[in-house]
Image (cartoon, rainbow, N blue to C red; front, side, top):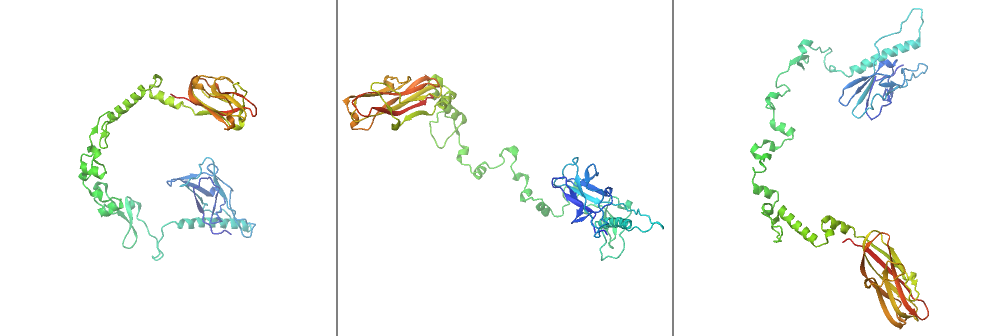
Length: 434
């Protein structure tokens, strides 16, 4: 028993090499020998290439026949897989597997051999496979309409068909018809003069009314817009009167006008003069824009150290003491400033309060710009206030190297008893660019 089969199957490319089952709608394509299977690969342009089994692809079985030991006579579908010599089946490509069984009958019956049912069924199946192939082929040919009389349509002989069109006469029989001008053709020599309806042809080509305009209706590139109305074109482009204004070449821009347009040279002269004035106003080390930009870029962030009241440093009378310090981060010139806050017991008598910014640890620098002091006559100044601030004005130190330590150093002269005098405060530094 052999089910109704379609003896060929198509697969569209999906970026792989299979496996491709040899079955159609779940019905396997049976074959007695893998030599009866032909594989044809079609590229995206439909060009066919016949593949060789064992070289270009591999079948999973040498045959796919009904199981004669099974009452249902089932067929297990085989599959085909492209080998690595073949690229993957890409989108747009198609592969076709078809059975082409030989139209032959190989079983020989003899008078004394007896009847072999299995061999007979195999032979009948082979004949049915050939019939299935014929049915599949016939389903893909032109046929006479079922309403026509029986009989075949016979083509003219080859010599009559050569260089002709296939047509049909008044009886519907095929005839060879000569190719004549005007029958479905437009001749190149006529330059489209044989178009039946020019308006429809233009519409089909997407051409609008501009295609009917004469050459004079268009501006020519070579004329650089001289073939149009300059005033109207400026208006249509939204250009105002400034588009035709005379250039102002004044290099000082003295007019300060809203209606004049400065020339390139005038603007350059103005900028060059401004830069020259800027260069003349600074030191020789900064007489180029590059040097000025580099100098400004070298201005560093503020480096600071702040000691809060809760961390105040206890002082010994007439003894300089470090409250805090900062370390210079990079070579250069630096501005410094800060302040010291003194506090003490209400019964302490104060002779003076002094603070300085020093490059030596626990050492006063009494230079005028680096120190400040308040003097008292031994009075209990803290009896009426909780703290006294001695500010330090901003000053500059030049030529410092990275790693240099600068100290905030206070000193106080005091007597009496009670809570000792202590100091806290802040020290700031900023690298200079210019």
